[in-house]
Image (cartoon, rainbow, N blue to C red; front, side):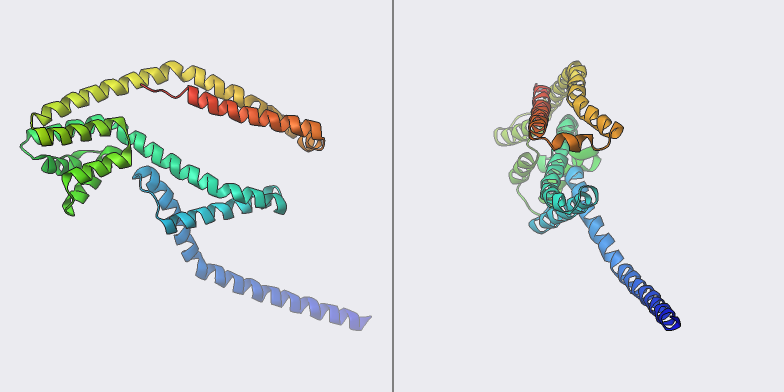
Length: 288
């Protein structure tokens, strides 16, 4: 008996020493890899932020990294919340969510540039009035214009500094942004550049028209804001009720899912809620 106690004590001591040694090695490995992991994560976050701040699309290599990181994050989250088997299905949703985030960032950037199109037209008109050519007016206006419109105009100025033709740089901006305001500015600039005339006056008229357009769009959004908000609340009410029922009686949703009929009806209701949310979003979209 004493011998067994001694052997047990020795095994426990050796296990504790081995565990401490293994923990030390793991900590050293984490410390050595942590800067690289942190730098990689920061680079991925910066790619997503630049999509919304500068409208830049990630390259093929960056996109692969983002999709892989999204799948890994979704898998880990699904594993912790739902378990191993459901986590595999959740991991397939991760890349779709990343693509949606990138697309949403680019859309926000495009709308921000479109909102600043009137300021862009006014800045170009002021530079042309000061005696600059169209090429020089772009460079001069880019240095004094703020916001996303200024970022886009500075990108055009950088392309001109690298030797790009004025027409090509403006067409590239129009293709990137795809907005009504920028299309108007580029069309006016290229037409007047080829046909001659008072480009500064035309751009000022464009600026006034774009400001009126933005004001009309804002009024239309304000008029439909309450209806859109009510629609979203109505869509979210059943989901909130289901969560409250689960909190009040844990396992309630799992019990419903155990029956084929209730699971089928619940899935059908969820699909109809998603369709209703999409339709409300489309109906509430303002087009002026």
